[in-house]
Image (cartoon, rainbow, N blue to C red; front, side, top):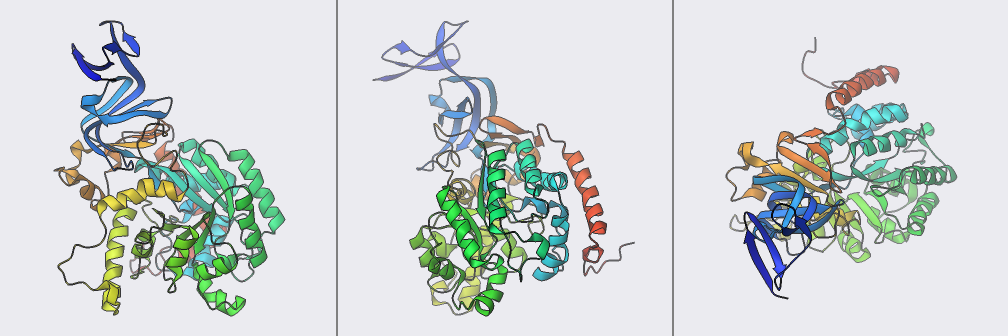
Amino acid sequence: MRLQKIKIGTILIRSFQGLLIEDEDRDEGIKVKKCDSLLRGMVVSMDIERNVFTNGYVAITDGLIVDVGDVSECDYIGQQELGGDGHIIIPGLVNVHGHLVQGCMRGMAEGTTFEDRFFGFYYPMTGACDEERSYVSAMPPILDLVRRGVTTTADDHFTHVHKDSIDGVLRAVRDAGIRCRMARLTINDKDAVPEPFRENLDTALAETERVKSKWEDDFTTVTASTIGITYCETDQLKALWEWTVANDRQFDIHAPAVFDQKYLADRRGWKGGSFEWLDNAGILGPNVIAAHAQNLRPGEADLIRDSGATIALVPDMEQVLGLVSFDARQFLERGVTCGLGLDGPVVAYGHDLWTAMRSFLTGQRLGDEYRRRSGDSTSKWTGEEVLWGSAEQALELATIGGAKALMMDDRIGSLEVGKDADLVMIDRRGETQLSPPAAIIPNLVYGNGPSPEAISRVMVRGRAIIKDGEHVSVDRREAIKSLDALQETLIHEVKVERFVRMRSRYNWV
């Protein structure tokens, strides 16, 4: 059919062989397409061709994207119309790794060793969180995420002294309107886990089934996993993985986890790496998503590629903890699916995925320089070549890459017809770091993104959960007030005062 553009009054519509289509405009007698929401601005689609419509639009009906393109081709009117000049529309950001219940101890890792914090205050403080306390603890980190444009998050929950602790996190997730892939992690190794936190397999799987039955819907999925190889008895770890296969779920594991390097050889007699162990156990496969995945042994990156496993990169946390050898390039150049994660607020202080995008690039470049200086002949740098990585690549990892990593890319991660309308609309007109716009993607990524106030809308399946920087139903100040009070209560209740401002050089009067 021949496509004609017909302009009548101020409305541009299209006809096929002269036949006007869709609903009738009462005043003009014109037939136009109508949608629930019509958003205009620069549209960064993240579709397979990576189309960017510098003067584009997104049309949404019933929570789904019904059209995307250049404004000159738009024949929609919206029940609500938003955006215009100076606005940017991107897919909703996807955080592929986190521990939301850690809100109650945000930043307390400063000045501590891993075992200081894990056994000193992490286990005690989260172990004291029942459903209500976990709700209060998780809500500010969730607000951090959504106020900066995250529409989907993964969460790994592994403190089950109170079995309903995970319910508090998921209630906060639901109230905030964000998508979530929740992994209920079983931990029971006697050397890595205090006794009150240990679970037997039957209890763990029964609780996973309970949580799955109670909370799963179109926006939340639940799976079973463990923290790392050395946090769970070997036979039970394999059984957890088998549950994920039987239930068509992901198996989410930290690999290598901190205690892997301490216990794999000494207690389990394994001289190889964590991924080699997983492969030897028959666990490493397409449903595995491994967090961190740094300091690998030679050949393990190829093993990951060949298995079809996915990597949750956590560059912001790696940089905060001083990992100068961060390397995402080894995966991306092999075609391994990767997304970006934040870890928990105890070490991911601002809980900001834009920071993770920048850290992905700076961490990689510092790591490449570290390898060059360490004599790695594959990492020579003369100063003439373009540095590896790009802002566009970082934004891909935080959108479509994250969606693929969580096996959700059939529904989210890009702005394409038929997908759920999970998106972010940014008003850059007051954002000095985003002007001028010729290099808008680098300015977004290296400038740590827009301010929350510049985020005009965050939508999950077409429903706005953020309007002009504020959540539509959750009172941010009340959430902060409640968490402040909870932290003070927990610190005294479980007697971890010594970890407050640990090793501070300041005189706190």
